[in-house]
Image 1: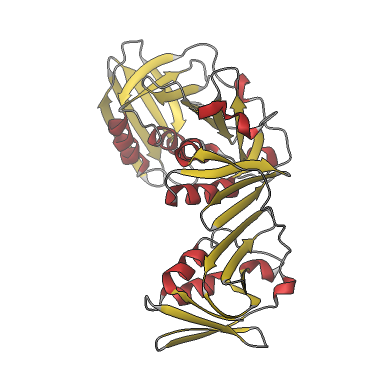
Image 2 (image 1 turned 180 degrees about the horizontal axis):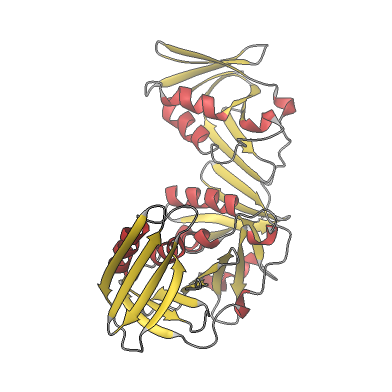
Length: 372
């Protein structure tokens, strides 16, 4: 295998694989990226068996071949090279030599036939969708998705199509203590997805989808096929295996009764939360909020660190009340709101609190309060 390629093209291709390759695995080959040269192109493949990325780029081909090498080390090598043409050649011992001008690196590789086989999904029906739709759905729900592998059905975001309420594409994330629901109305009704029921896309897969969306403005190809979510942008295809489990009935968690309403400037409360968060710790991130006559008092106390108290003006004219929260949960839920003001509907008697942007019902976050 031997080819020439522009440094920035190869760097971009390898960089896309870094979030996918396994850092801790019983299969060392999953730390590697597969590089295949044929038909005037190089193909770069990374997989952890659940998520697969395939990228294709034009190159000046000298001879065909393939090899697998450490994705992390290859990226570090290319990153330090001059922005010029890179020469890549593999010898009979699977040693890859990468050179550019006077810089030469050699990296030990493994035979490509040891790499997991990748199914060609080139004929899978995909449909165009505005990347901003996926960006909003993922950004506004990702923070609430669980990480406990013992509760597999909570380690992904539920994606569903609501055809009864105006053809909204909706994503829900929850870890059992908080929940975020985001929805966007899709053109054409979104019927192209053919979602008979919701599907669960794993957290890691959503993170990789978001990376592609952020770098590719405009529309992209998207669809579900064979238990996978597939996203295609120019030169790159990402395939994410769906979680085969039942997502909880999230509608039961949405408060039926409107709680005590508080209107707050988003930037004001974010700054206050960050100030009181200074004295929180990893073992305890709780805080207490006291409300009275258009005033919110925020207090955080950690015996190993100290105490923080802050006061901000809010729109509230109800009875005085006190409620406790996890500071991080509040920060996450408020930070993704796009409106200038947020609405907190605080449930009484340890009932959930609902957070949303003022005038926007297409994003809500629900947080369970702490006992005070």
